Image 1: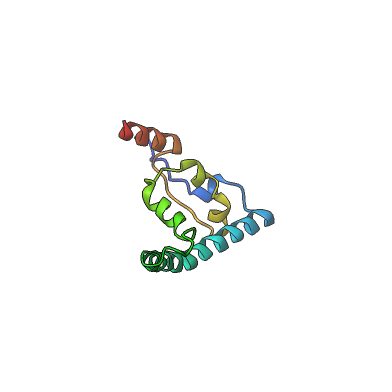
Image 2: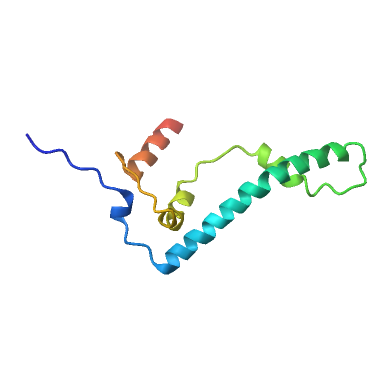
Length: 114
């Protein structure tokens, strides 16, 4: 019998992070943190503003338009966007055990969407 192949961690397949890669990961983490802090304030503020604007039509509605558009557009898969987040993963020293490759996952998603 053959021995089972050991799982490889994600960090073993990528080179060690450089100073620039770590700094880019820090910037990405800071942007995500800022979005998580600002998004609830924006959502509740724009909903309150929208309710206020229903009674006074003289105020500009441009603050509410991004919220309305984001609710109207369906969510999309973005595998290419996720692939560009590797500096964020190296910043947090993320590792994963994978049983399928990225190409197999994309193939399964395409087959599911047909």
